[in-house]
Image (tube, rainbow, N blue to C red):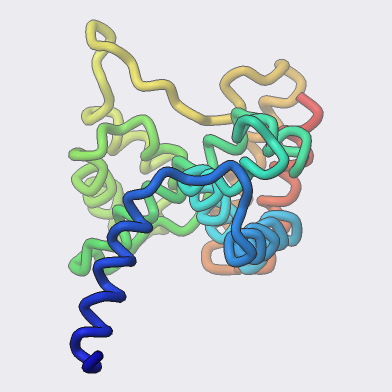
Length: 211
């Protein structure tokens, strides 16, 4: 068989395999990928976006299915994450993917609090909302408060079906709400200080776990 024929045969086989339903058990490659992603979640490498991206991949590919029936069970029993916090991070990852694909946005969201303000905004309006926040901030840092103000006009109105925001402080006991507000303010002050942002994300995770 010629090299070209082999290549075409391999491509056809790949398409067939991709369209086949996922088997309950993980392949060795999937198991290796899962362990790598679980390590990212546990250690919080670089920034919270690494954790968010790892959770998104695990949920999308159902890499939890070897040990857990649902993604919620994987988060709670396997990683010690509440459902609200995990899906909030996934929302951040989705917003980040959308923003990263836009080349002409010189300033992109960086902190968890910035991303979370954009989650409730319909996907088609998120870029416009972020551009509005950057314009509103001017020469000042783009804080979560500014993003919230800019995004307000793009969020669903009260007479429309609301989009559930994944902001963890929404359903927290009153005693913890000030703590999450302080975390948002610290993130805004941290700017691009990644080590500090990692610590803030870790603290947010621990506070969410005791809600």
